[in-house]
Amino acid sequence: MPAPFSRPSPGSSRPLTTGALLLLATACSDSGATTDPETTATSSSDAGATHSAMSSSASGPTAATSGGAATTAATTSAVTSSSSPATRAATASTGSEASATTGSGGGSTSGPNGGSTSGATGGSPSSGGPRPGDGAVSVDGPQILVNEEPLHLRGVNWNPVPVGGSHPQDLAYAEFAAEDIALMQAAGINAVRTYEPLTDLGVLDALADAGIFVLNTVFPYGGNPASSVDAPVDAVKAHPAILLWVIGNEWNYNGLYVDLSLDASIELIDEVRGRIRDLDASHPIATVYGELPEASVLDRLGDIDVWGLNVYSGRSFGDRFTQWAERSQKPMFFGEYGADAWNATTGEYDPESQATATHDLTREILDHSTVTGGVCSGGTIFEFSDEWWKDQSGSASAQDVGGIAPGGGPFPDSTFNEEYWGIVTIERVPRPAYDVLKDLYSE
Image (tube, rainbow, N blue to C red; front, side, top):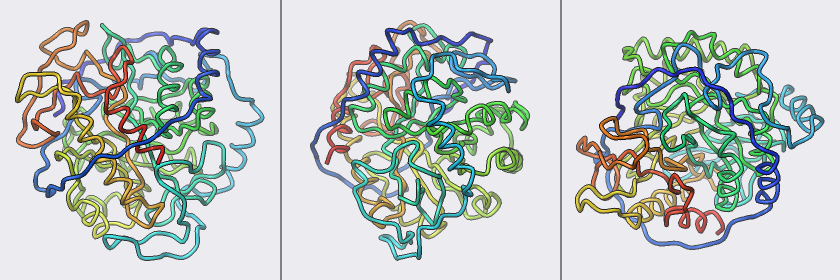
């Protein structure tokens, strides 16, 4: 459940050191391995309220960038670029020739659960697939396409805040990029979703080199003007790592973190969407909703290209795949899903239950992939690493066990223990959930 947010304070970006860049270049040559437990189903009525990486804070009057500095139109890279300008220029040229909202993947075919997919099917959602720089990004029916090949998101939410820090002013993409990207690549992860604009070209270069796309949130906070998207979109729209732009996070729960009504939130999101589209016609635009949106919401935001759903309902998504297919033919991914590693029922650390939920939920997502005729474009699990700032009654320098139990939610305790959600710890030690993803993503 969202908690009160805090206003950001200005900060400076933290560049990668030369040593870190060398580490990253070496680590990015690794790849992942294999396994598989078992799934149980629950109905969608078991779902409770959800939470987010921004549950205690959001951007203030100007959107924060890596390290907390305000984005400007003249943004330059805080780190040395690790991919050639020629590569980025070629990709930008390719991307500018295609509309983000129309694909050319051929005719439609019937998919499972009543969905329909484009003619572009085949391959495996659990490994391989398109990479950044392969070609133009588009959508066609329920599929996200890169160079006309369907993409399945094997993603994580990435919000790296150090011990003692807070969001967003201490957000440190560059500081954590080398270690985090190496771990992601080793696990077969191919996408990150951010909660603030990511405009550091060096970090984006490293992600692209590792085969990782970015779902870049450029409008996280309703207290910003719609024009706040101009600088981050212009700064990185030509970068091959950019897959799509994201507006908001479960804004039906939090009113874009300023308690806007549902109607006002929809109007602002549509205004921001139009502004982004005027700036960039080459990338799809997504918004992230809490649970399944009503048909009326989908109708009013009919120009949104891709929908993310934040869903916490134990060990299964229930009938949400079928429900989505009945409501929309647009691409859908799970913007947040998973479980934390603290068991409020027993009062004990419980990474095994987190791993069980991670397996079962990710297996369902893979089984319903648009790559193989389903209705789901993948997911971004919550989250990559623990964040210690989130329990407002505790200390940002210690891992607190405070949680909320809204009557439905994550396995096994239906309680959101906010500082234990990482598939790796804040010290970057992998949990069993990390190994489960690595196994699933190497099948």
